[in-house]
Image (cartoon, rainbow, N blue to C red; front, side, top):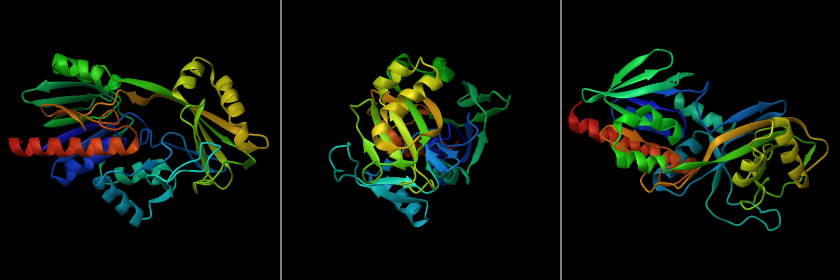
Length: 320
């Protein structure tokens, strides 16, 4: 039995592990140069800085078991149980975890035991005699028993639009994504309140974090996330203009002259609406990711696990 997983973010990586653990040969295709997706980390002169997902929560028991194993391995640690809004102290809630070395280190850890084709974008997927033909832009063609698609739905749907029932296509195509602009900037002094981050979902800056306080950098390196609304307003501007506005808005959180600023644009940051299913299946073709039954890192992880479980069961039942 063989399966292909498209995308090596956390959903794709955990789908790959689940399939492999069920005795299925798995190949992952990742368009980017490194695994991770929004588990993304930049290296700066002062150290690492997370630029996509800043932390992850743990609510689900199955995900908790994974996180406990990662914690025992020294890969992750609890950062806090809440964040200040800039005025009030943090409120206790679900634990927030960070990854030692940055979020990308978690993706690298999960990818090391899987077969991952990096820098290869899948161009087409077609049904072929009860199986699936997967073609990448490198010219590689793989015929496989099942496929798990984890990219954002606007990128995944064109690959297989002709293979989907009309109702399923409409359901998936209805999901839209909000954009996020993310800046990384080194500062002389951070004045962020404990634990080193401010979360203000209704403000222009939705999240500001100090990567030094996360244990990633030797000096204060701030990650600044604009809200979806402000990201939409700033998106047409060039990078230099966007950086100037984000840094100016973040001035209450640092002292001194900022330097080494870098901008990242995330066009598929926040899915709306989130679909109620953990994954959507059309036979042995499955869709998974953060658009399914809960966004963010934990939602994407649980979706990947569910897709791997479902496809493993289908392949075992078929005797493929």
